[in-house]
Amino acid sequence: MSALVRLLERNSFRSSFRYFSTTGISASGHSKWDNIKHKKAANDAARARVSFKMSSKITVLAKMGGSDLTKNLQLAYAIEKAKSLSIPKRVIENAVKRGTGEMKSSAKMETVTYEGLGPGGVAVVIEAITDNKNRTIGMIRPCFNKYGSNMTPTAYMFDRKGILIIDLKDADFDEEFDNMIELGCDDINQVSNENNENLVELVTDPKELGKVANQIKEDNKYTIKEMEFGYIPKDDMKVEISNPETKESFESFVQLLEDLDDVEKVYTNVEN
Image 1 (cartoon, rainbow, N blue to C red):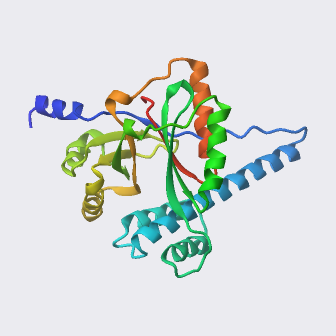
Image 2: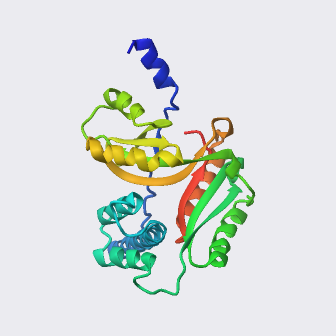
């Protein structure tokens, strides 16, 4: 392959970085003990929130695709992620059993989607997992109201895609680029993360997600970290936030949504 052809192929992909960050916990109080208690309470609450969200996700995936991990790859990787987050084995097993109906539960978990415009006119699509849609919308709508924003259709600004996060391990991104193209991806993005892992986001046609995942699993060159269906903003619908105050408001708005127990993912059309 000539250098020119390789360059053209490389440029046909929208190379971008997706940044993940965590918000630091501000200690308060007048003594070291007060600070320790405050941090512990915040950390405990964060762990409980993560455990609840992963449990809900596993239940829905088991309900949709069954408990056979060789056939339900989304469930398999969700369980692996839950384990990496130190979620107890019993919690994971019970979540699967609730999804398959093996464990009776009055809660009927389902995935729901909400749309709207946030600060700066940024489009957002919110995916939530809930057993009570009235409760969930009752938590989401005030987030929009707080920032003078409104809920309105925005999904048309996005494409529904299959998304894989893979770890290249010690492999070089540039050297592996052609191999990743051959998997049948629509887009390839390096992922910046606080753990400095060599992560890459592969975007596929939704119908090809399982095929691509199976090929990666068979090749055994990369490790799949996450696998899901999600929303990718269309190129002509992406926006930038240039005003620092607006950017700060928008980031606070997204954080407020992500902190809600029922919210699974928040997708935006902000240009990275």
